[in-house]
Image (cartoon, rainbow, N blue to C red; front, side, top):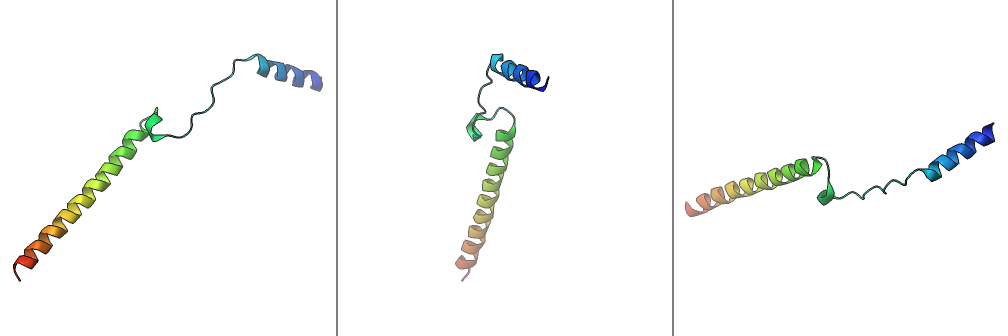
Length: 67
């Protein structure tokens, strides 16, 4: 009985069509919305740093010009 069940499970697995292999993780090949979330936070972080350095440079130039 047990051997028959194993054999039937084994032949059933062989006769079923083979599923495609899982795709490797890739930011460019994302089917869900995760690429948009990652890109949004990446650009928001870059924009925040650019604004920070722009203000630092502006304050530094203003302080240097008053010397």
